[in-house]
Image 1 (tube, rainbow, N blue to C red):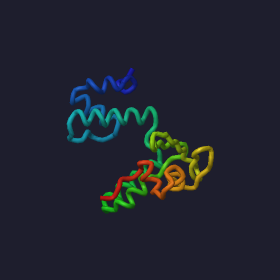
Image 2: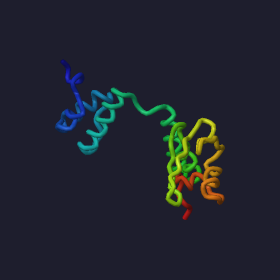
Image 3: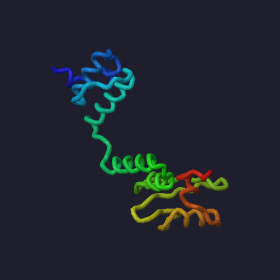
Image 4: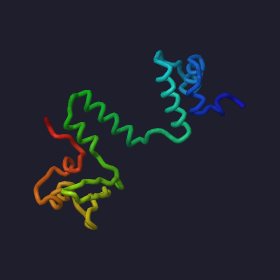
Length: 145
């Protein structure tokens, strides 16, 4: 049985620096970077899990790249828009005056109180009776300073 077939996360935790470098080269096809053994372990554990369970989805990679570009260009408003995209099925919770409110993200809007809503702002207004920025009301954005 080769070393590659029995490597587990527990084995990664106890490898010495030489073993870590060897395993890095085997998993990544390149020499290990000159970083601490703990960081090499984290990188190996990520690679092990990625190979066993699959990596980051193409959609997530795109969002990460766009967010990094917005951050590098110092465009916080664009960054907030990128980050606040919600996946259908996500549930948002808000307590308002002691009453819990749950909203479910749909492909084409939101579900709240057994009704379809076009926006979070419309739901926030229905809950509070006042105009609110919906993403802010549900804690998806920070207040401007």
